[in-house]
Image (cartoon, rainbow, N blue to C red):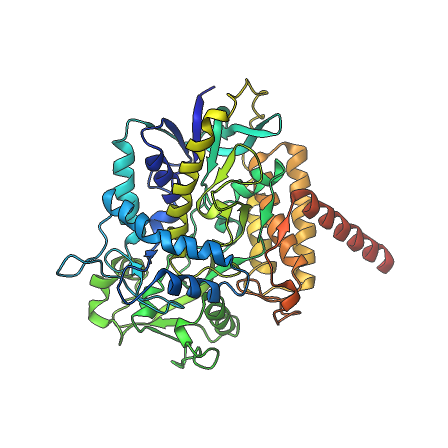
Length: 523
């Protein structure tokens, strides 16, 4: 039973950055896959949003964040994060991130949708995530205070006297191992693998959401899911991404007839907020007209040089993006919801912090502004690291926990069913009927997992249920949450949401009872 003063769960940007900011304080970094594999951070194509040009400012950055966030962004937090952005970019530079620079050596930021200035600090057009992760992995490997433990998937929190004291984690053979700690920081990423079409890796199952909620943590903004409008629609799972920077460079969205459709939907056309663009693309695809990102004029022959990752994905599918439009479709990309955290990264559970997509800080509101995700990851990783060190002397040493869970193989069929439910009923467009169906079916899968003691399936089902229940409860449309039966925003609902697992289960059981009554009435 490995013990550690500080346990970080997750090897994406937030986890790695947090471990480095804690150095030389010893930490255990627990990761599901070898470092660099299976991380959404490594696939990020945009960059880090930061006001680094004299013509820009943190105040402008915070304002853009508020506008994109559909009225429920924590304004004070957004400004504090924007003001901290420059320092965190400097940290990344010190850790070896090779951000693009001009001939004089100054940072060379790009433009992305809904930003009022060029403030996306990037690497070779679409390579920021991979390049930043490569630099941080090399630094972590060379840092003696970081003990990297690979190949373990955290599936349950250890609780002692009402506080978190580590995790139970499953190895590749399915056996559980106990990892105890005085302080636990979860940075396990998002929820994309709960949807049939996603840009996230298979490890993004919402485990932190489920583990935390099961232990009693408060969940915030679970209904707000961002669908990236330009996932490359070539049948791959996960779907490769056509970075937003392409639209920043002037690429346009057209249907199969070559007609642009975004100018009629928003004054900013292709550079409208992601939720607006996603619904526009979804309408063309579901209407049978198809949707394509055309960069042949805006980028053309320079495509492979400017956007090598996108070019590679397209060429593998037989598409030359320099001369042909790229087929696209909306795919689950980012979760604005998660474990509620305060401005220091503390969750509502003593002993547990969250950083990156696992947490919900109030920065994104109902719709994340492009490239604010990597920024939030490093800002809150740094804040959690600082806060943990401040309180560590007062945290009790963990006791010997109860025995680990019974090893039960993952339920592949159950996982596929959850993906189908979420894609069909909790996707880009939602309504009362579909959400009721989703909640009831997810409850059945969750109860099945409880009986079979299948933690993997239980985590997936409970995370999905929290999202569906929150979406059912919010009877309006705002940001990434769009209800066709409540298509307008309601000013009375202009606040963040809060949900516990007990509340979600109570709702699900009530809806299941209603469904059973209706079936009996029709019999």
